[in-house]
Length: 132
Image 1 (cartoon, rainbow, N blue to C red):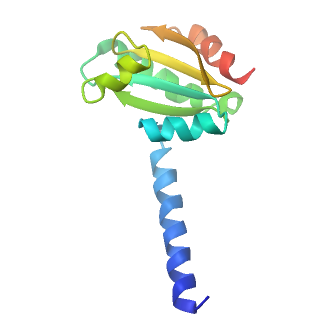
Image 2 (cartoon, rainbow, N blue to C red):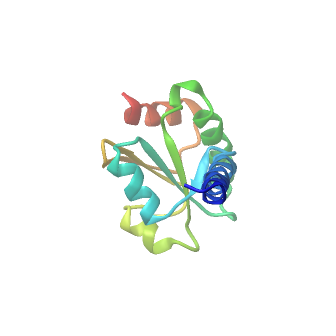
């Protein structure tokens, strides 16, 4: 491999790493069917947060989820944020009846769903299902 090709390959890998770090800065990546499929293919535990900016329950729920995902207990749990208004069809395909819905995956399968929960301890117990 020539020096130029090596540098280009390294720069590309570095850029992907930086984008990945920035995407995970708040514990969540943007939802896409492709990303969900990739994570499910390797049987990664996943939390999908169905969120809307205008939703008061979502605004209470989101900081709690972000704090939980930053906890060492949930270090292996991937978070995907799905915009209810822009991605409603995707949300409905996952079984979400509305915004402020949480969909949990483990072992490549959907295992549970929670709607409008904002109690930190109940949310912690909900997430534990995916990692135990």
